[in-house]
Length: 188
Length: 196
Length: 202
Image 1: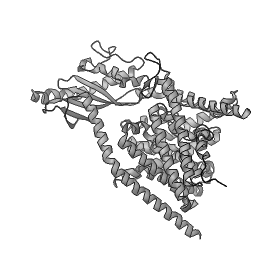
Image 2 (image 1 turned 90 degrees about the vertical axis):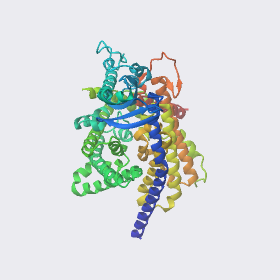
Image 3 (image 1 turned 60 degrees about the vertical axis):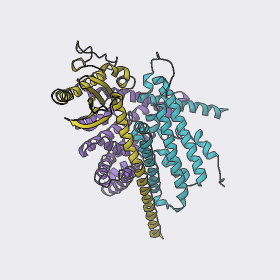
Image 4 (image 1 turned 180 degrees about the vertical axis):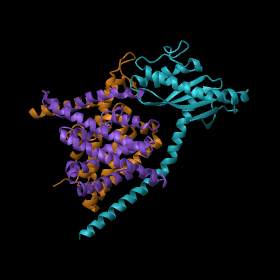
């Protein structure tokens, strides 16, 4: 009797597990293409926000960082978007830095961060990030750091603000040589 | 993210900055359930350390050597919880045979651990942060160490609070939450450690 | 004798046996997610769905499951529903899924779900189990949304898309930080104790 019960238990467990596994594989098969689609769309939306006239995108790797090159409808290069990360106050901050063909900042976006809500987290807001538009490499410092700096830090969140400026500078530095030597001349 | 840091910082991050109980809010049931006794807290804390280090290593291996090659990522939740449940059973049997003293100290906490979300959370987070095996090991040490630290500190505080005059509506659980709130505030101060 | 249909199993979950305020279960997602009203609502719905699904299946198969393998079978059933929810959210509401983070898969070990499976669904018929799941799920959702309204309202001056106190409001920051979660829940439970105590004295 006892062994019979035990066998029954094992059989039930196996049946339930197999059914569950089968069910999940079906759900996965339906959901996974949609999930990929969503991920692609999300990235495309962000790129569109940085380069609204962008039509074609090409993913490359420059140094250690993923870079997306954006072209317009006619195939003319508009600029590049660098994905970078820096250490902020509460951990890593993930940035998207849009750079136009003249080496100026187009737009900066914060993808993900772990800064203090209400203080450091305000660096992810438009009002702070707007300051970066159209800046060149030497202007990408806090006003308190260098006289030519153009960025006002968020009060109470200097570390987070400085981290973003640093991350943007690094992204620009990474692109600078390629911008000068190769592609920008071809576009002329 | 986390996988870019060196091992020491991974440990610190898990131990203090992102303390699993006070900042991440995981495993709170046991936190409030057991912390009215210092001895029980110590027992649970050690049992969690013991199980978590092993289970998150095993889960890591299961994910990377079994689920990924077979493209069965969607079974992750099911596989991890079953891995942990059987591992806890297994550890209980081993402990009872090999080390009766340790078994007497930790034994009653072991069955409770299967539903302690900290164990499962550490396994998930190790995968989500894309840690390698060694980082994952250090991470789980940090997480469980942080659990131990917080629950012991909290148990100490609660013993003191018990003898304090508290308004009737706040007695018991509510005042415990408010105590936890102040502790969490203190742990929030560790956030800037990353900029050291 | 147990009645076939017992409406009380629904209403108990809302107040008298509220899973959070009375039974102190399911605290992790409650405290972690309640800094935002929208996310809380999402968590409440996801949670109710898992509870509903697992209670349905478990009460339907309870007669065939021997007691030795009861817990593993329950866990597999719950994990299945959690994974379904996980993938559905990832496919349709990726932002919500990202905000809920690890707390979505952690519903598996949520004491409310396993607790209800063991204490209620394993002993009652399908219909009552569903009522119980809805009651408990709704009880959880109510508390988490209430907490989120307090925390987001005071800590950020907003409730979802609404702005509450105008532009010049200096937010009560601590409310959306982790300590605020403990604080608000402490006060809510004290309030419930106070109300319940007053009724008992009458």
